[in-house]
Length: 304
Image 1 (cartoon, rainbow, N blue to C red):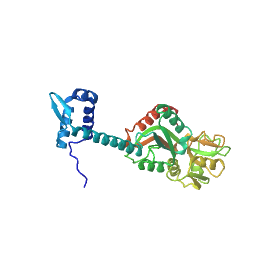
Image 2: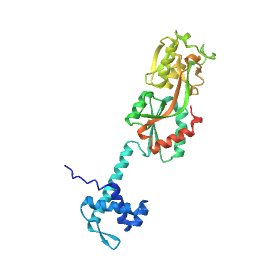
Image 3: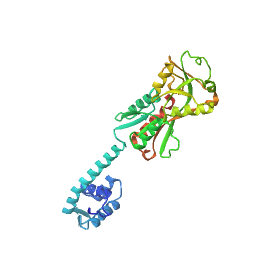
Image 4: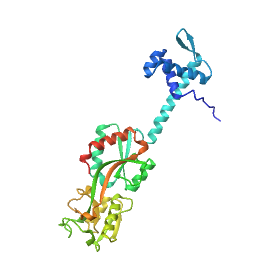
């Protein structure tokens, strides 16, 4: 069984003790530590009680270190240095205040939102190295909880009290058709008239897939989905190639403007996503996340 260290011996008291050993004076030590001389004296006395030996001898009003104090000072330096390194390594392993930040994002946000935020982050905190991880809403949420990413750019997750979200913008869902199709010239699309059409979609777990399903529930029919894919740009290529129609968020409008047209749905089919930066509530004071939040808030007008 490891030797127990008494409650009187704490990291804070060792810090005060080392400061006193360096300054040699209660008043100067108190000034350096921004505390009172009474607090310094109490800390030194508590260490003596915890160690059950004298660390100083009195010469008038002065405290003169004993050989025991010098031995403790050497050990305290090693202990505090080792603990500081342990704290730093632990925080770095958890992604807290390290020199990198891992940002998870939906594929569709790489067109405008991700570049805007990354550039803003590099200006605000040049030493911070961003890493980008792409995935679906469900996949990114799991990575956030696992600690694989530090923050996510995605739709706000429902029923997630452990997640803090800062909304960035709202995005409507549109009917996506190839340029030149029979829907191309319409001002809006009545989804209920499309029951005989072929559709393509994203797989489960994507925010756009949820909107896709919700819209067709309102239209009161199950779409004939001939293919699913794992990223939104592949999905747009399938649409442009004539394989099927789909529903897409407005933020991808500029991805393939010469190939795919996004047409508004009738109001009764309106589906809206709220895109946000999301992170664990337990990390709300992480300096890197605070920097990302500040960039997000200042760049809201440029996003979407």
